[in-house]
Length: 220
Ligand code: 5RP
Picture: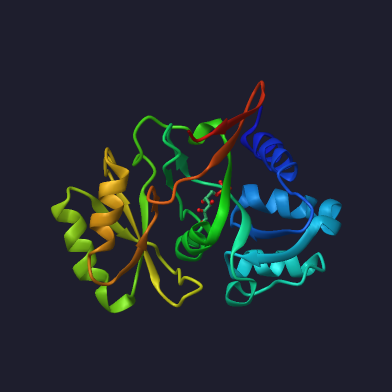
């Protein structure tokens, strides 16, 4: 089965998590886009929808959803988003699409975080996927040097500006053996807005599409 077909399976499985009156947070990326395309089928259930990126906001608007700013929505009942990597503790790497900061804010504001992936993203140790790091532009070189000290190889994402007007550094070759500690430590480096490790606030559920169907896992 192709990755794309698996992504669609995971996205469809997430529809069942949407309950009447939900304030829904919507992530970013190709898996979530497949979910967004199905959201009109559950439109009646959705009280309000909050977007994790301008791209997601635009896609929702095209389907006639009114998008509520987080400041107005308050807390989120359910946040649904993809990931670049996930492990058995439900720690994630996110930000392949560059929306990591707003995604982390929505995940933090959500009572429940459901992550939709295909099984190519399931890993033992996070870090084979280069770690996205959002930085304010004037700190780019300083931050890059700090990652070199940590044996990472930082590469500036070319021709890319985040929705917040910042830049993204992708850090290769990190072995993220202790995601909670590393998220904490890297986030202390001045100039970093946030790193794409989602471990302090992991996913609560993972819906992982495999060739045999969708495996539903709940964090203990
Ligand atoms: C965007 C993300 C996405 O969730 C992640 O990149 C996965 O994307 P896709 O569903 O296209 O594989 O974190 O910033």
